[in-house]
Length: 315
Image (cartoon, rainbow, N blue to C red; front, side, top):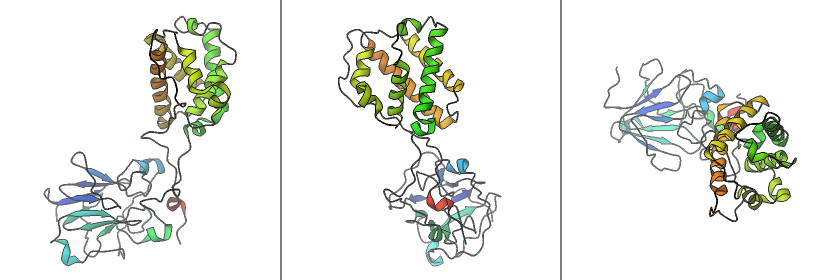
């Protein structure tokens, strides 16, 4: 039996997601249709996605083993008499597998079509012994989707991931020390006569921004103080770019985490924050007078944090 391009198909990728092709309705665990972009929809099968039932590449971060060992399945099923009559549909069941309704082919990573007679549920907890099919292991490990509020293990803050205030002070002390000991013709004029406490103040600002204690607000005057220190400086785009460039280089020198997730968000904040600083420093600029210290998180790339059902032992 060979796949038909007009048939709804699920391709099982090697140690990765289900690739859904052709015209098939996909419903999330709340029963809402998933609006897809492009010809292929990637559905999680490792159990770790923060965007279930869609894949968010967690399988690569956790080293998911998706080896297919299909066997008899006792998961929730739809009677065979309904399969051909129903419009093709894939349903993410609450705290359970992906249920196949209608004519949907499951194609293994080796290119062969799996026999789905009596097996109409695909594992999405990542723990089944009969991958890609469900064997009800999700019940034993406590797989959750949707995850109730308060039960999800949240990733550490950027502040924690960076190493806390000690790491940020190490960063700023080295940054400003190098900048003034080896005078930078572009930046030195801005920091000439700098307050000796300035590096610690910047570290406190970064710490609070990245999810740490509100030290800058409590001890250094918060957002309003930061804005006041930039007024009238007339910072240039060349100075802004140079500051970001040197800060990134110093992050390497002092050993801040080098993983792409942290660095993408670290650099993202430096770019955003310095552009705001340039605007606020322009002569006659109309600035936002009062606001909290910004809060910067992981955006689209949080680090992998195992959920409870991913780490429990199986009998």
